[in-house]
Length: 365
Image (cartoon, rainbow, N blue to C red; front, top):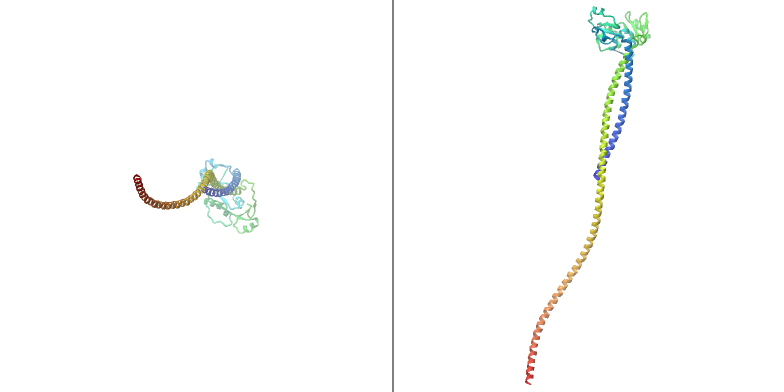
């Protein structure tokens, strides 16, 4: 019973620790589920926004379907210009104004022949031959607001934008123009274009209005979606791991509780057996106590008997001594008797002799 109680105490401590761990895991699980829920909300928002912006750009610019064009073998880049470039944050309107409709161009192959170029069938699309242009651009040239993984395209863009320069605001235009080559154009951050004699204000309502702004936002949303999906994947892994840990702990707690129940049942049976043993022990103890009393009584009786026996033995010894004395006296008496008998016989002989003499005397008389 003591061993079982010790095991029950030990298992209970384990169960309590496991329940504490389980509580903490469930709290972590709730946090992870909340993170997953928030990430899903943000992911769906980002996907929805991207879908709207992509759809809007498609409606604005996808009048021509390259896939169905029978001269698509002439095209170098299968997507439009704006889909290959990244713009420095906040400068989308500036780049869009500088490029204008060119953001919607398809770039044809560099080695396309004049015959192929001038005999392209009329379609609702914009095309440009790939141009090599390696001049070093000024630091304030609009090309420096653009990045791309395609060097040929960057070369083409540098050619298109060689006379376009950027400034933050209109207040910088005059001083900037004075330091630039002839026919240069200045584009502000808001997309307004200035030259020496004219101004073209940015309008987002044109066919190409805000395409790059939306495209930049689409790219940001795409990156955000990737981040959300990566984060969601991590959180899902955490979630699955926590679920596994929770299930494992719950099984362990259940198993330990089952063990405790078994131990309790065994303890109950053991206690019944112990009670019986204790009762038997009490009965035996009572019997032993009774036997002890009896033993003491017997020992007392034995002691008393021993005393009596000793006294009796002493009496016997005394009697034996007395008997021996009596025997000695008897022997003496026997001897005296024998002697007296001899004397008696002698006296009897004397008496008989006297009687005979008397008889003789009487006869003689």
